[in-house]
Image (tube, rainbow, N blue to C red):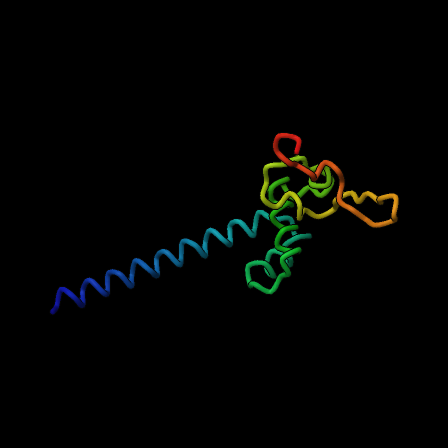
Length: 110
C-alpha cells in the first residue's frame, strides 16, 4: 500500500514539472513575440480570440511577425492558406467578390 502512495506522489510531481516546463516554454515564446502582437497572443492562449485572430497569429508566426511578408504568402500546401488574412479579392463580372483564382488548387487541372 505504501508503494501506491509513493507512485501517486511521483506521478503528481512529474505532472507539476511538466506543467512548469510548458508554462516556461509559453513565456519564452511570448517574450519572443513583438510587443505589437502580444495582446493577440494572450487572447489566443486564453481561448478568447476568434478563429480569424488565431489564424492571423499563426500566419504572423510563420513569417517571423513581418506583416508585409505574410501578405505575399504562397504556401499553397498550408492547411490555413485559404483562410489567411490579407488576401486579394477579385470581382467577377457580376460584381460578386471572389477569392483570387490562384486559390483554386484542384489537382490534375479538373
